[in-house]
Image (cartoon, rainbow over all chains, first blue to last red; front, side):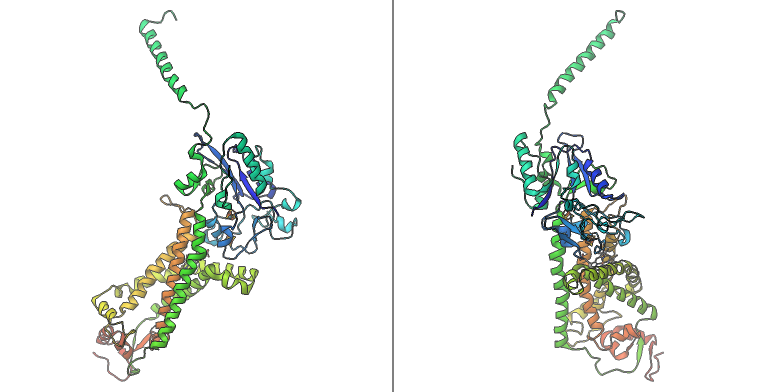
Length: 206
Length: 337
Ligand code: HEM
Ligand code: SF4
Ligand code: SF4
């Protein structure tokens, strides 16, 4: 089985937010929740870089470790998913996550955050693949379910598929690391595999 | 312009000269290309400097502008390992200590038995506040410990769905009962503060082991040094639990002066959890002395009245004063008036 990872080549990201839009549209993600976002550092100064960030689907994920009801599970592809049926909305996964990935429907005063939501790597949730229950409902302020399950259809996450400069790569960690290494050799410098050291305890030698 | 007068022409020439003079070095300063490997954009360097990487985003939520903060891994270590050790040692250690103590010392009895004469120790309001706070405390403690240890101890027994359900209810109880608990702590603070300042009597009481360790019965006023310590643990521990607890309950609370960020939430959780487990350990000792540890003690908070001999043994100075006011009743002895 592949070990799925994300890789954002900061040298190529042009902050077009296509990945963000693609994600919102594909999963019908409501207002206030953003599974993916683009952040620009050194904005307007030399050395400006943009990075597209979402759940990195960490190895030995901190969110899963701290969850008091153990509602996370890792798929055979290395994708970190969770069950909204079990989640009690305590917010601990957000405190533990190095990438600010977990999101909540409400601000959370009074323990009323609601069920946590985050990037699923377009791999749905614990319900049977490609069912309406897995996709979930979006009406009356509800946000049940997990959105579409592209992985079950043999497709990769839409954010990376949409990326206009192919800055954001998704797929088997070995393969995307190889693509990135070739780029580094060709252009003569690295831009860093953002988040890899923290998420996967490894970086891409180049 | 032929009509331009000489000084004006001179000024114009000077300005042109200045513009050229400044423009040339400015052009020379402009780098031919942006160095893509500038130190400022190296992830590991940025992390070393600031422990988190923050930039500008397009979402209204400021928290989304932090792209990376590996500190979550340290917090995880605290929550999953350190806290569990602290909690297990504090709570199980205290339980073991109390069991051993009970086996060695047994129940501290009223010497010479009961006199049959009693005096009021806590009035109805005091007892109401005590039991309101105490019952909230027990539920807060159990629902709190469920967050720390539940998934190891209960989840295997209950199954995922039942455990998640129970945890959701436990969370609601923890959240809502925090209000009567906090009110109780405030009321206790106000109604008993007058008797809880340390005094010279307390040092002697402590030196003589308080009559718990050893058999001496050092004099004490309404509250002895041990009870004063419990009082301050409740007031300060309860206060700390409430402040950090409300920070957890109203996450990322924003004021003009201070806004809680993720690091702040982690800190609030750490303080809350340590205060919580230590508080529980201390309260176990308090419950022990109030029940099986000492004969005649429970009545003080139960009926509100204690036996005169009990008072003589444990709070001699308080008894003297109360007897002087004629507050002792029963047993056919005329009130001292
Ligand atoms: C006084 C008001 C209190 C408030 C507002 C409060 C609030 C909270 C909140 C919001 C949490 C996070 C978990 C969740 O969302 O359910 C929590 C956890 C916890 N609380 Fe409290 N609490 C209070 C008092 C106490 C007291 C008195 C104790 C101890 C007897 C206690 C022990 C704990 C423990 C052990 C945890 C779990 C820590 C962990 O493992 O992360 N709390 N509390
Ligand atoms: S990025 Fe955050 S939410 Fe995703 S697996 Fe890692 S810790 Fe969990
Ligand atoms: S918010 Fe939900 S998923 Fe996150 S740690 Fe709490 S219970 Fe687990």
